[in-house]
Length: 258
Image (cartoon, rainbow, N blue to C red; front, side, top):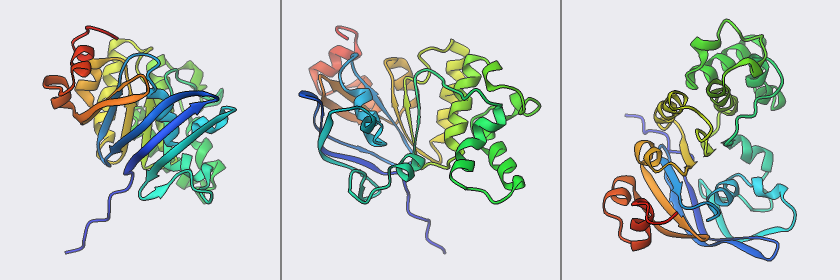
């Protein structure tokens, strides 16, 4: 019997601290995010969830006067090591933002943008197949297959958000980061995003920031509760929501603050 290939997309923060100038935003974060699972980051606004999420693919590097200590490890490699290529890292660790941001291009060209930039295909046939595959994975193909040359800006908000997921998937990442991906969507579009995440977890490591506790409970395997830049509690989602060990976690889950 042939051994199964090792899982990829294992993320671990190790005593990770982060500063914006003199202001410390994260304190001694220890958190493992296992492959082929969804980890939800919950907590009040301003508690460091999005800062932590953007640290995983070094998006914070674009902000002046930031610094960090500690480690952020992807498959055993420190992503902040001097030899780490940030472009390659962001191909491996894709990100979808709170507000959908399709390019002012056709649906097809939105998906093809990354593979073209990275010279990921050698022929038009390969590119066509890659675009179709990404749209299928994002549960969007059947809705747009006859409109590929039309502007992506003509899609509904929910479709544009799934297009952004497909655009990220076209780079064949190991990890998918999502920062409040459904906060601006209606309930039907939100349900489609959640169903999509449930399917994608078979192939990817997914980390999602959400203020919607019901959403975290529905879609995630593990949950980490952040408060004032620290992790208060982390564990299987069912345990966090039904029998949290920390009183502050219980108070947040039950709506007594936040």
